[in-house]
Amino acid sequence: MNKIFVLDACALIALVKNEEGASVVSDIYKNADNGGVGLHMNRVNLLEVYYGLLNESGVEFADKILQSVTDSVVEISDLNQTSLREAGRIKSKYKISLADSIAIAETSVSGGILLTADHHEMDQVEQNEPGIMFRWIR
Image (cartoon, rainbow, N blue to C red; front, side, top):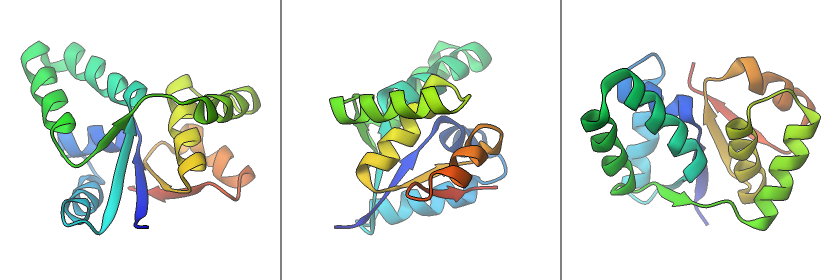
């Protein structure tokens, strides 16, 4: 089985907006395109990207990015029962957003690596949940 990377919203936004860390995300995308790794994102985290782009750049751009991601190598998933329970555990233990708790849960359940830049919410999880792997893009 290939290594799995889980995208959170800030990682995808960094790529879309060419922010610091975009090259890290781009390299992993390329590796996924070549079959070297798996790339995964929960629909809730994709929604977080979509509504942010909708507010900042309008419907045409937001729809373009949404279509691009859904047509790409990224596996978009819904929240299954196992991830739901893990997200609930994470959310109740840490002061983090619901979307971030879902990204962390998807990472935990898949045994993957969370691709993120969100130190503000995720540092506490990384310090206290040694079984959950993080790849910081900046």
